[in-house]
Amino acid sequence: MSDSHDAAIDAVRQQIPSVAQVFAMWPAAVPTGPFAVYGDVDLYQTGGFEDPRLVLYTGVGRLPTLTVGWCLFGASRNVQPGKDKDSLPSGAREALSDIAVVRALQLLSVDHPETDEAAVEALAAPGVTGSLVTLASAVHQDHEGRAVPFGCEVGTYVYAHHQGPVNLGTVTADVVLIGSPIWIAKAETKEDQAQ
Picture (spheres, rainbow, N blue to C red):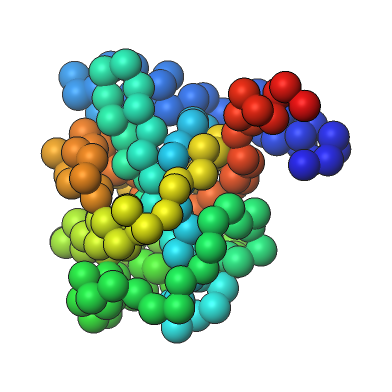
């Protein structure tokens, strides 16, 4: 990443809380959405949707008292760690058979002035967040054992969250965040810092 890109991320991060701050009182106090957060995530990327702009990022972030699943839909112009897939697993295709789920995906992935309000409304329809989490779980499970997740810092706008326990692949998440990325930056490894 360039210094200007790093500076831009730092400027945004100063304005939004970490996922640890937002969920500090979970489950006694449930955050209300929509809201923006950032956090460290072991992330996979999946393409292969009918709309080539749509990319699904699934991942897991671990806090001291909470395991957070990430189900993020964004346009392909976002930074994309990982590799695209040519096809979606059957569990994901089944979730996409629901018209309300497809509508929510369109609103999460396309930038226009009504996106935020319309996306929140679409996600409030009964069963939609559960179907999106099912889609994310199927895709995440398909990656496990075949690819290593990227250690990333993710900033995202969260339109909805789905309370667990939810099996996101082989990990049980206490809550799954559903949103659209603001940024995705590969985290520095010890090897990167040594260079």
